[in-house]
Image 1 (cartoon, rainbow, N blue to C red):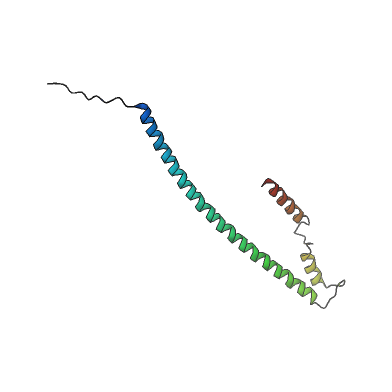
Image 2 (cartoon, rainbow, N blue to C red):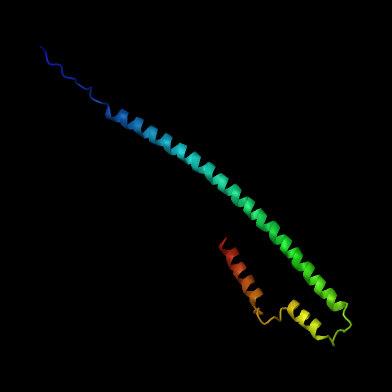
Amino acid sequence: MKKVTKIQPKSNLPESRVKENLESIALIRSDSINDLEVLTSDFKHMSLVVESVQRNYRALLAQNQLLKDTLLGVVENCDCWQGNRCDRCVQILNILGGKNIDLKPDAAKKYKSLLTQLRKLG
């Protein structure tokens, strides 16, 4: 009996490398498209979050302005008069004017400075 040996044809190395490279490139492109879709979804979500924060902040500012206007109305409608305010009106005016013990008077300046620095970075 004859012994049969299987002889594998010599693989064409440059051709197999090209095929492997093309397959790798196709996988990379597919992954890149998937990553871009995920990133797009993340940006849409972040955009919705920012819009929500903006709405909430606008509402907060409107409420703060309403509160300030109400407090000024209380002072204006009080029986005391400018230059001779009662203790309650003096306290309200001090709070509205930023003369609160808990708050530092230069907080607005620090905030403005920080905001300016951040804008320079961007």
